[in-house]
Image (cartoon, rainbow, N blue to C red; front, side, top):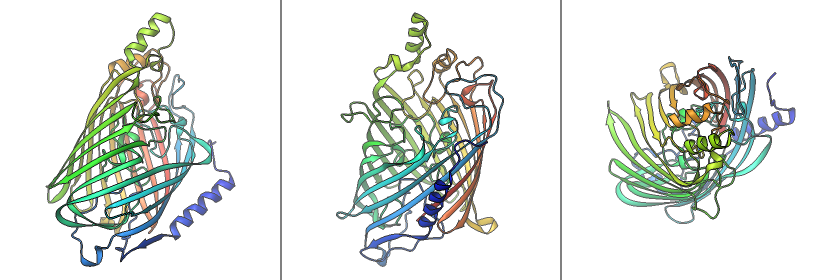
Length: 474
């Protein structure tokens, strides 16, 4: 029997929200607003990179304010799998199912030219499979590290953004989630500050970055080894600056870390535990298609433990090792690559690769030190459904040698820990999905994931996970 099913009142609530989102939209302009296309825009909290489309005279008046919304419901089912044992943070081997639900309002206005202020109040509910434990490349980007059986409120984002034009061709900016319609120049500076997610700005990829509309797996929608600063819901306080010049863009940011690894509270006073992030983006044309290549570097300074210190303490005390008991103020850093490359007008390729310092514990994302992922995204143009999308991707993840020893001794990571690890190997994940454009404001998605060696454990699994997703947006 599936765990955590909706009771009738919750089902009614979800249906009401989905219908409301599909049928209503509110936006006010100082002038005409460009018409929306048939496909809904991406459902992630960051605005997509605007297309370099020259602005026309009837598109130059900036939008004054807008209200958008989205709602996403994900059901996941995991059949029983082979498991001779399990630990405190294992994916449970019996068959089970879980659901997550969220509904978000995106309300923004333009206080002065080039500026936007946005707030994103949100309602969340539900749990991930295994309570978001058991697989380093976790199974749903819609599942947070903190679940609740009843709907609860939080402020997902609250930000101010200032764009400063530096010249070049004038481009049209379409209205979107957390983005007002208007124009901008090709060369510009963009400043963002407030409560945001690091991956709203860094490590973005139009083919694999949004669990509300594309892939679900953590190691595919983001760089698995990018231990970005965040609370248990993936957001933080911080600021970032972006400089677009010619075919290059440079980004830098500073963000507050959580008070303790994987904690619900961010560190106060702000920036005593801090992460610095830098990214260089190169835009090019390959096979007559515009692509992007990004190089990422990040450095965290905070109270973190090491696997070797935890093992040494355990050897001296005879207790199970714990990185939380040996935390001191130290650094952790990593690098990454991100490729976004259309192959044809309807087929796109994406790839990521990354490495992070292996001896230091995971802070806010997941227990991965080396990560590689690659996949394809195909629009349904060839079979007469251009707003449909089919995706196929794979990810291979590894933890450091010290991390393996720590897990083998019974230590717990951020989201994994089987109690022992006699035989370790890379975690291998395959995911595929089909997203059906049911109507203009809604998509229905079927998703399947195959996980080999969950939590780097050759003695458990493999695991199959089926998912059904409903997403509505205006």
